[in-house]
Length: 119
Image (cartoon, rainbow, N blue to C red):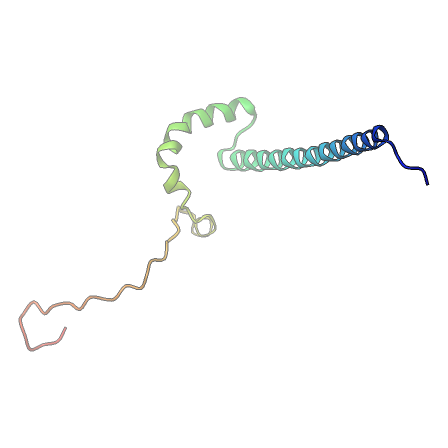
């Protein structure tokens, strides 16, 4: 078995580096393609919801309605994000999610008439 020269070793390493770069680029391309598909799916879903609730026909109408609602949504976004959609659909009115807080002890009411009769 003949020993490789330094020049041959260098050439092999450069070829391996090119192969690794090509594999790295393939992985990066797959990641970008996946992100594009996820974004496209999200845009389609959001557009469908917008069209469903606002009876929108076409891009021009959607743009006008969205622009008109921009300020109101910006001011009330935090509250809007607390809407319980499933309950709201069932009861046909806006219902907000209730955040659970720690245990609350019921306060004993004082008897406004003085002592004697427990409240």
